[in-house]
Length: 469
Image (cartoon, rainbow, N blue to C red; front, side):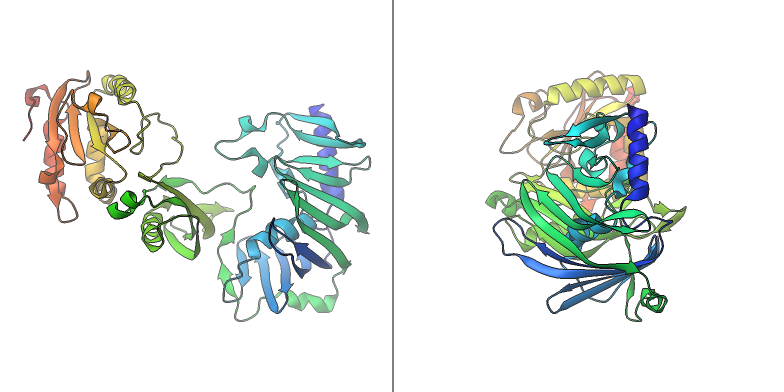
């Protein structure tokens, strides 16, 4: 069945939609409407002149607003000055279903298991999909990469289905032996959010090819990644340092920062901040500062680094920043009041014994400004960070109003300031309980003092002795 399903998908790619490498140039115009639940309907037109993959001009018209963008090749897209707020929605719900309805088919690799099933309420339709798609991806919603494609007996695409979205295709025209749906409707959670109707589909006139050249005022844009493109690889992140008064006031909520990842992997904010958070400017500033510290591997297309548009999201709760799901290590990467410090310590002891390291318990909370300063100190001083990682297994232990963890902590010290460092040997025996205020310098920490502390308590039996300075 897998081979038959792959063959059916391959045929669908060859005969559906106007945009494939072998298609002749064309000109398309469509009218569209969109609506979100509880809001009024908007309408407009989309017009596109297409010469080949990544060689096109697209114009949206919404009332008096006209927005044009150009693509010269895969890495050179141009837009006029200004911001077009509706662009992302129109590309996802209008342009993509009309022009590249099977754009995610490239993710269905030949070695992936596929299945075929009759479409519900339409037995003459066949739906093809990946079997258990989650096993082929890591930390990405399978809907982004592997939708279900429903085809009629001729292989014409009639529906694209995900867990919450249905795209339907009807009223077909023929363009160079390819089926192009003239009517496309998109439903999300059972509500129709857009409908598009092609009013013109014709070969591209030679005189119109001049329109494919960007206007003089258009600027080169970072590459906008599609859902099927590889994700940028994050190599460093920081949590926002939320002002204490905002934590106490219960400020929080999701925040999304639009950024550009530069060719060297550095990040700069690029557009509006989307937020449903309570706390206003203070939270935005903290999230913006944290986003600027993110670093990614350079994003490569055809072996060359390019700038890409991206979004960095934060979730800020009543206790400060809520870290994302843990990755490779099961040790806490942030201060989590729900963690079990005894279990975390047992895991750290095993790791320390195998690596011949000591253990540092870093006690603090996401409400703690100086805890954030310490995180940033190690990022800004890679030599000190390397010394820490080479000699210690670090476990963060939460202390907050929600969970003091006093039963665990009082076995080692009476903790009164934060962050507080507790050094243990590989078997969990106390070596040192360290107040960090003596290591401070300005609004950070003194590199020399921190090196002296780490060198003093690393694996060296001659120096092991307990005490509190």
